[in-house]
Image 1 (cartoon, rainbow, N blue to C red):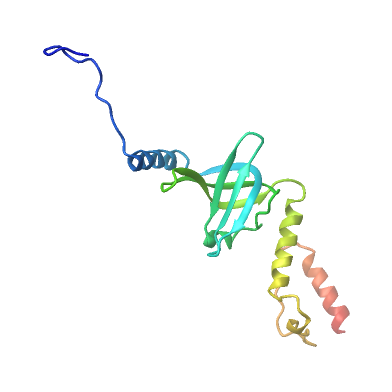
Image 2: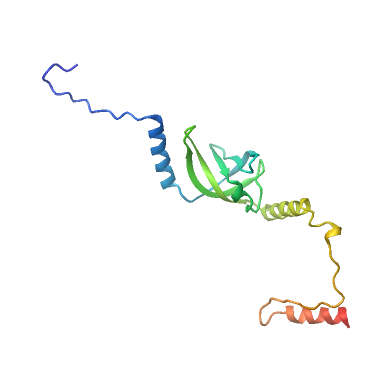
Length: 171
C-alpha cells in the first residue's frame, strides 16, 4: 500500500469489455487467416433449414467448426458426409455472440483414391433426383442431323472417327 506522497509503481491496467476483446480477437484472426487450406475428417454434418452447411473438421488432436453459406454450398463438387476425409479452403472468422471461431469454407474436395468416384456418384445421384435420367425426358435422335459440332485438335483422330461413324450410320 502506498503512503501519501509516494509514487505508485503499479502499471495502469487495461480492462476490456467482453465485446471489445472479442472484436479485437476477430479482427486479428480474420486478418491473419484469410485464405487457408485445412485437411481433416468431417463429423457432425448437418444442413440448416436455410440450406447452410455446418460440420466439424477433426484430426487426432483437435477439431474446428466449419460453415458453408448456402450460395457456396450449391457449387461444391462434393457434399460433405460424416467420416469423409476432406481438404477445405476458407477463412477464419469469429462468431462474436459465442466467442467461437470457425472456418468459413468456400471450397471442399475429398481426399484419397475414392475422391473422384465419390464426386461422380454424388453428381449422378443428384441428377437422378432431378429426374434427368428419366426415359420420358429422352428425345430420339433425328434420322439426319442438321448440324454437327466437333471440337478437337487440328491433327486429332476425332475427325476421322466422326467421318467413319457418319458413313457407317447414314450410308
